Image (cartoon, rainbow, N blue to C red; front, side, top):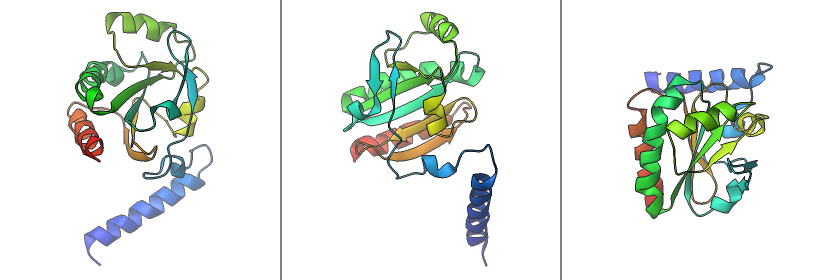
Length: 171
């Protein structure tokens, strides 16, 4: 058996084991090519935003917190992506996961963004998507299917985001 099949088997076993461990959300909740879990959250102005209203667009959902250094580092890059690809049918949505959103609101005053910031103060949506750390990013295709999941952020990861966005806006 070559390394590729062994690696695939090891990944499948690890995935199965993670779904069986209590307290760790089943990864199937965020399985690629499955319908993205629907949600509705308030934005910074209190207006209710529903994921379904973006059907027909490529949507990148970034789960973040103001205390998260990698989140702070990537936020200006996310804003650049949003501005560049929005005319092509792309939408960025930031989902702040802090129970008290006041710190996020204050931080955004110094680092403003033009894309919607939604408030998941009860962590309902982050649980739907199996978010366990910050940041987490998912990309949803025009049909509403989850196509890509990325956990964490380090410099250079934005190139992976861009590859996914460019491919999906062309579909």
